[in-house]
Figure 1 (cartoon, one colour):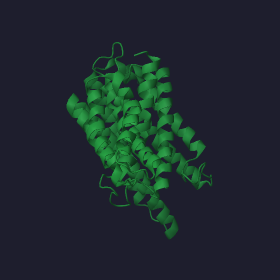
Figure 2 (cartoon, rainbow, N blue to C red; figure 1 turned 120 degrees about the horizontal axis):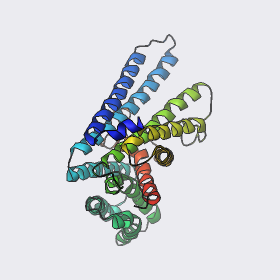
Figure 3 (cartoon, helix red, strand yellow; figure 1 turned 60 degrees about the horizontal axis):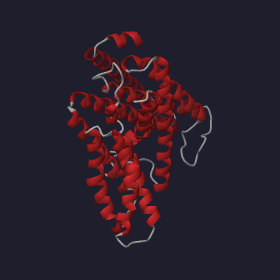
Figure 4 (cartoon, rainbow, N blue to C red; figure 1 turned 60 degrees about the vertical axis):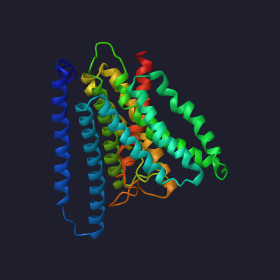
Length: 332
């Protein structure tokens, strides 16, 4: 598979991958549909079965969304691609901050975050200023936000308020902006193919998360206890290891669409999966802190953003780690 994919031109590669990926998603949807027709005599078992199908359906929708976003990013031009990811950051940050109460003294900082920091970060990515966009938020924004807040003359919960805002900016803007930033990595003999790195990262991380979920569900049925029950009722180390293995193997199989040899693809996938899965667990802790089970409601979005963070939280953690790992190892 590695050599077969590498020998195809970019158009043939993207065609083959979409057939494979969309085919697998359609098979997954068919399996869920067939399982939904199963009937149970015990009402409790029936309710558990429906809950599990709901979770699987949510994972499948997330997978469709991520692949669809990549497809749009592939078709769109450079500016449209950046606008697409910037909108994702905007809705994710809006969702995060809506569920993190702010005070009147934070309004200037919020305006700064949405209408100055977010456009500036993506403008830096779009103009290829790698040296600046990598430090713009961790250095300049980290110092500018509390200065803006302190000028509002409101010291109540000052540290907590600024920490929440900086957390939201780091995850939703800084982390997410590293997905289109993968296009800036200049690998030798890999011209005009960097969009495949986006697909590679999405597929690897999503494979890890789906596998972890399925194995965890099976282990819970066998009576295994979660490792951090106060944070997650489904996080089990054995399931996490299974997800890591599946994601890393997927990365090695997809090395043909990347500038990596299979061993390098496996290692970078392992790093991305570790960052994504642990980041997802961290976001669960934030949800528990806010007293919500998910960033959206059971039927309708809490914030009107459609549960954006539920879809992209792992990717927001995996993208910067993957970006800097590849940049450091290949000295780009």
